[in-house]
Image 1 (spheres, rainbow, N blue to C red):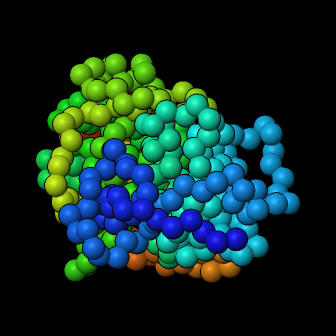
Image 2: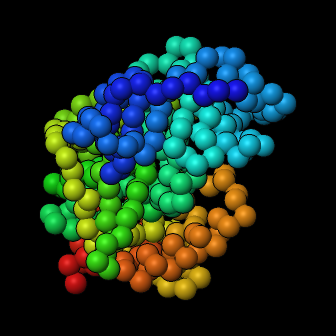
Image 3: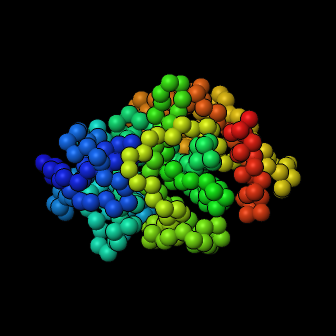
Length: 319
C-alpha cells in the first residue's frame, strides 16, 4: 500500500530535521526550508493501518503495542493517544490521532516513541535519559521508568540547573567527546513532585492517562538554533547497596560488563530485536565509556537525600 506524502512544516529537535504535514508546537521550526529532512511525519487514513496490521493480535490488557511487521516496518499504538507505522529505515512515519486525545499529549507521546524508534532503525542508539546543565557541566541521568530521573532533574532545576532533554537522549560524537542534543523543554512529573520542586513551572498538559504524570515547562523556552551540549558525565540511578546506611549516597565509575549492562538496558527502544542490534549496542557502550565517564549513583529514594545526591553529582563532574 502506498504511503501518504509529507507536508511542509519543518522542525528541528534532537539535532534532527523533521518534516511534517502538521505543525509541532513544542519544538523549534527549522531555519533551512529546503534541505533534506531526516524524518517525515504524515497522517494516515484508517484503511492504511488496517492493511498494515492485518493478522496482528493485540493484548487487550496492554496499553502499549509494538510489532515488527513482515516488511521490516514497525507498528506502534499507545491506547487513547496514537497509532503509527515507522518505515524500516526510520525515515518515514505514518500516524493517526486516536479519538479524544489533546494536542499536547498527542505531540509529546508521538515525539517520544516515534523519534526514538526512527533513530534506532536508522542505526543510532538513543538512551532513556534526562539531561540537565549544571552551570557548564551537562549531565545525563539514566535509569528505567520509575528510577527517579525526572524527580532528581526537577530538584536540580530548582537549584538553578537548565533542562536540556527529558526522557530521551540523542548522543553524537566529535573530537573525542560525547554531545547531547536538545529535546522539547518539558519535564514529566507527578503532580506532587512538580509542586514541591518547581512550583512556578507552567503546566503543559497530561503525559498520558496510564502514567499519571503531568508535563511542565520548568523555565522559559530557549529559542533559535541549539548547538549540542558537551556532556561531562552520565549517572545510572542505582539502588543502594543492601548493607549500606539509609542516608548513604555513593557513586562508582562503571566499566566492563557493568557499563555495557547499564547502557544497553538504558536503550530508549527496548522492543526492537534486529539480528545485529546487540552487537551494535555493545560497541556503542564501549565507545561511550571510552569518551565519557559513566557512574552508578546509589542512594535511597528519599526527598531529604536529594541535596546530598546533587552534591555527589557536582563533586564528580568538577573533579
